[in-house]
Structures are given as C-alpha cells and as structure tokens.
Amino acid sequence: MTTQTAVTEPGVRADERGFALLSPEGVSYRVDLVGSVLDPENPALADHCEGRRTVAFLGPTVDRLYGERIRRYLDARLAPGSWTVVPIGGGEHHKTMDAVETICARAKAAGLDRRGVMLAFGGGVTCDLVGFAAAIYNRGVRYIKVNTTLVGQVDVGVGVKTGVNALGTKNMLGAYHPAHASLNDPAFLTTLPDRQIRCGMGEIAKMAIIRDERLFRVLEECPEVFRRPVDEPGWLAGASGGRGVEDYVLRTSMALMMEELCPNLREHDLARLVDFGHTFGPVIETASDYRVAHGESVAVDMAISSELARVMGLISPEDCERIVRLIASLDLPVYDPGTCTPELMGRALRASWERRGRRLHLVVPDGIGTAVFVDDLEDIPATALEEALDALAVRPAPAVPAAPVSR
Image (cartoon, rainbow, N blue to C red; front, side, top):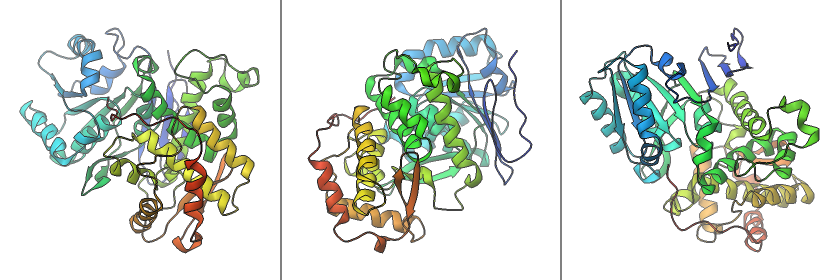
C-alpha cells in the first residue's frame, strides 16, 4: 500500500508515489512515478479515468511500440464501448492548430462529452497537443498524461502549459491547463533512442546548473545515466535512499522543476529561472526547421548564456568551463553553425525582450547551482554576444543530427 501526502499549504510535497503541488492561487495537481503502468493488473491509470468516456491519443512511435499493450490495458480495465484509441502525428511539424482541431474532431466523433477524458500517451509534442485540445474542447475537459520520453517526464509532464507552434514562433498559442493526472513510468525510457535521452538530459542539466550543485556533480560523474547502467557514487548513497542514480536524477529533476513553477504557475511574473535555455533556444529550433531538437536547442542556449555571463564578468571562467564541459559530456551540442550567428542570436534576444513585456529577464548562471537575471537589453555590452559565440565556435562538440527527432 503506497502513501500519498496531502498538501494543505502552498508548495510541493514528496511522497512514496511522487509529488503533489498546491500553488498559492489554489491550483493543485500531482505527478506520480508508476511502474508497470500498462500492466492490466495495475489499476493506477484506470482509476484516474473514473469510469468516464475516454479517448486515448498516441504518437506514431508510441503506437508502434506500445499500441497493442495500451489497447489490451484499456480493454481489461475500462468498460466495453467506453474508450477509443486514436493515433496522431508526431514531431514539431505536427504541433499546429490544425492538429489540435483534428484531435477535437476525433474526440467529438468518438462521443466525448464534457465529463470525458482525453488521454495522452507520448512525449512533449503529443502531451502539448492533447493538453491544448482538452483546454478548449467544450471549454475544457479532463486530460491525463502518460509521459513516455525523458523530456516529457522531467519537463512537460510536471507543468501546466500546453500549446502549439504558430505565426513562425514556437509555442505561440496555448493555455494553462493542469492535467488531472500525470504518470511517469521509468520503464518507457528503456526504449528511447540515444538522441531522445540526450534531449531529456538537456532539461535535467538546466535544473542542475541553475538550482542544484549536487545534481550537477552527479551528472558530471555519471553522464551516461539513462543510457547504460551506472554505479552510484558512494557519496550519493544517503541522498538517493538506495534507489540508484536514475531514480535520484529523475525525482530530483521533477521536484526542482515543480518547486520553481509552483509560486508562479501561470507566469504572472515573467522573470523565471526555468527560462534558462529558452531565450536563444526557440529561435534556434525554428530557424533550423526543427533540425535542432528542443533538448539540443536548450543545450546550445545554456552554453551561449554561460559564455555571455563569463564575458560580462558574472561567472568565473572556471565555473563557465565546467558548465560547457558538462553539456558536451552529455553528447549535447554547445554551438550550431547554421543558426548561431550574431545577427540571428541578437534577434532572439530582442524577440525575448518583446515577449517578456519589454524586459529581457535573460537567465545566466553566476556559479554552479545558482543563477541571476540580466534584465535589460542595454545591460549586454555591444560585443559580448559575438565574443560568447566565438568562444563556442572553436570548441569540439557533438554534431546535431540532420533529421528532426520525434516520438
């Protein structure tokens, strides 16, 4: 019998199952780690459906790998005729309003009513699409996320934002719509290709760099975590509870992200530490036509921001080198020749300034596990960005694959 912590005061509370969040404005939700989530003997997912009409949406890779198991689970646990499975397109190019309208149309055709549930199986793109569709379908219905990628489990799966790419801008349209349940089964990570793992490690490294020196050290010593078995450092044993490196990294990343989101869930304050890696990154993604995947763009952005902090005297050269070296050790790029030009990255700074209410709020590290904001464009010296890019251009680093990533 697992225990679940009740949250009565704003904040994030951990228990055996996962994490519960209660925001100061009264929004509450959970993110749970659930092993064997597709085992017909496991009631966790079905319990969240609560006997309601359910339409499950699967990305193409999830349908290929798990589609039959998902159908068998729903057949075993839900009432006959109460559920439908709908495959949808995957990848950033499918993250459009047309795709959201298609999801809504398929839900309507399946008879989904206002008490129904949209169920998303997949990575960030699938969960963003289904979450946004759920937010606007009949002015809002429940949805459940089963996060099957590392990015999904440590980033998309722990927040409340949904959205699509539009008007030449990543995530231009969207809504805040907390999931009724968000379930992370670490077993899904064993079928991910290396590139998917690396993209997730970019988001994990983000939280380590800005919030947690111990997590940073774990990543330095165990850069292959989630890709192959790694031994737990002896000094970590007390903090991990004996559950191993993977569990420690996963739980710590989830907790850090939720703690950062909690007091500012709907982004009334546009100065957000979790925007580290998300100033230059969105422009890198769109300018590359999504050749550079999200986790890779976050990695390049973090390297640029760190070198910019060094040039501006906000971080020591030694700490900056540690950060950039860590990113590269995770087999993530720190520079992309096709997009990392002073002109394009300068436009990225200005686009962020406009999007954030004409304040830049650029997040830069000022040490390991700590960060500060550069709040205004004029705070950045004229040649600083070009100097930061030049420092990264000469570093040996993993190449970005030619094809986009999808799940």
